[in-house]
Length: 86
Image: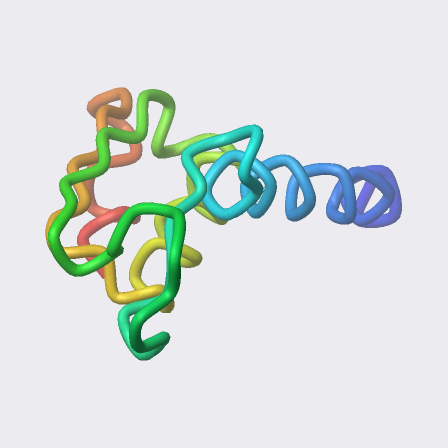
């Protein structure tokens, strides 16, 4: 069972990362990059993650926190609320 889930990890991680940081996605910049010409400053932004309890959603939340995005709001089912509080 665990191997089935592990096979999708690279896809989930890549999807989340590309959505947040690729210029074809949101193009967020890490807050530590000074004077960068393009992109959106992460610390000045709020991100809404719909499906925050899914594998892609959880990774998106973690990447957003690592990037220093100012506010991260996640929408998830009631059964995933406690899991997302950490």
